[in-house]
Every structure is written in structure tokens, then in C-alpha cells.
Amino acid sequence: MLYSIEDINREAKTDPKGFIERSEAAYHDRIEKTVELLVKRQKEKPILLINGPSSSGKTTTARLIGQAFAKHGIHAEVISMDDYYRTRGSYVMPKDEYGLDDLEAPECMDLPLLHDQLAQLAAGREIQVPRYSFAEKRRTEETEAVLLDPDEVAVIEGIHSLNDVLTGGLEDKATGLHLSVDSQVALEDGSILTADLLRFMRRAVRDRNFRGAPVQTTLRQWRSVRRGERMYIAPFLHHATLSIDTYLPYESCILMNQLQGEIAHSEDAMRDEGLGALYDAIGSFALIDFEPYIPENSLLHEFIG
Image (cartoon, rainbow, N blue to C red):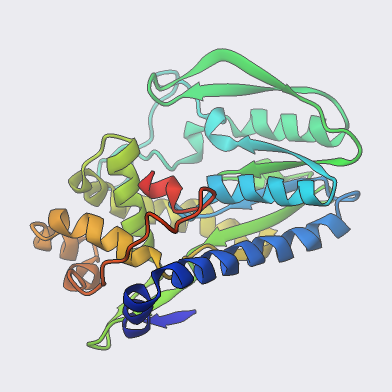
């Protein structure tokens, strides 16, 4: 979907409440329609594998999908692949060609364990889902027992959820769903903010708010993040038969106005990382009065808090 900044700014200024409500309703409608399809195949395919690049909204969308299943009388066990990260120091951290830690690499995760546990779930056996502490960068001793009853589904979200290591042998039991920002914004000068630029704004705000990482850190990592998407996500997209665009048209008014004070001093770094069009868009998005209107279950809370 291609949006114009003129339309976005007009709605942000004249009808912020309605703009937010329409944006949220469209996103939730996409979820509802997807779940309606999944319900029809629930008996044959009780596992949903949710894949998507960084900041595509996997965590929130997985939770909302679980809630949408509940409306159909189907309980969903939502499992995050983040809990299958391996303890830092227990393996050799892979590096990318820039010499940075390749945190996107599948070697950072215990994919064989997850594959085995998914196979057990599909066979009706109980598994012990691990727990990972990002603060301590290690797998904890805590686990959670999960057992799928015949009328339940498992929702698994993570960037490697469609990897062949994970999906091999599960083709008859699982459905692949790809999440993305599949929208663009046309600026007044004719340039385009592509989907990856819109996702960068999400990630930069999230990393600053929740991971103690300033925008400069996100900038340095962005090339590696994009490389990881090409290497670890794109080759396996053929496993996804469904997709959801998670973009909320009003979000850029919020994210840009939270970021522009920091990125204004990073022109060279922005252009070096292929983010020049985003730098040029500083000051282009209108302020929006969002706090009274943004719903509690908005995907945007995953990034702005």
C-alpha cells in the first residue's frame, strides 16, 4: 500500500481520533480474516509459524492472533522463539562481514530443540518450553509445561520460524504466516519512504525505550540486521502461505517526531546505511494528538511503550 504524506498529515491534524481508529481497525481486520482461514484448517494444522523481519510486530500480532482464536472457542499456546536463544558464551558467536556480532544468525538459537519440541506437540506430547533472560543473556532454569489438546493450536513467532531446520517434517502440521511492513509513504518531493525505512523508525524507538540502546547503536547494527533478513528470512518465505501488513498509517507521525531530534545530527551515518530518504524526511510528518486515542492493545505499544 502506498500512502501520501499529504493524506497522512491532513488526517493527523484534522481527525486524529478517527485516523487512529481507522488504522487500528484495518490492522485488526487483517488479523481476524487470517484467523478465520486458520480456524478452518485447525484440525489438520494445529501449529502456526509466524515469521517476519525486525520490528514487523511479531510479538503483538502473535498475542492478538491467540486472542482471535479464543473468539472461535480455540485456545492458543503462544510461544516466542526468543526463549530458545542459547546462553551467551556457550557457543562461538558468529560474526558478519563487517566484524559485528551476528545476533540474527540461527546459530544463536537452539533450533533443533524447538523442532523436536514442535514435533512432540504435534504428536500430542507435553513439552517444557525454556525461558531466556535477555538481561542476563542466558537461558534460565525456569520452564513452562505446554500440552496441546486436540482443540488447541500452538502459535510460534520468531525470525527463524520458517527455517528448514525447524519446518522439516512439519509440513503437514504447520501453516506459515509472514508479517511485514508492506507499505510505503510518498513524500512531497516525490521520494519514497520504503518499508525498511518505516521499520527502522520502529526499531530505533524500541531499542532506545526498552533495550537501553541509543539511536546511534541501532544505526551501526542496521546493515547487519538487513543482511540477516536477506540471509535468514528471505530464503524460507516459500513456507509462508499467508501474510499480514502490520503498518499503521498514523504511526510515522509519532515515531518520526520521537526520533528526529537524534537523527538530525547523524546525516553521514544515515546516508551510509541507506537511510538518506529518512533523514531528508525530518520535519515532514505532522504532530498527532495520539495519547487519548491509542488503544491499549495497539501494536505500536511494542515500540513506544
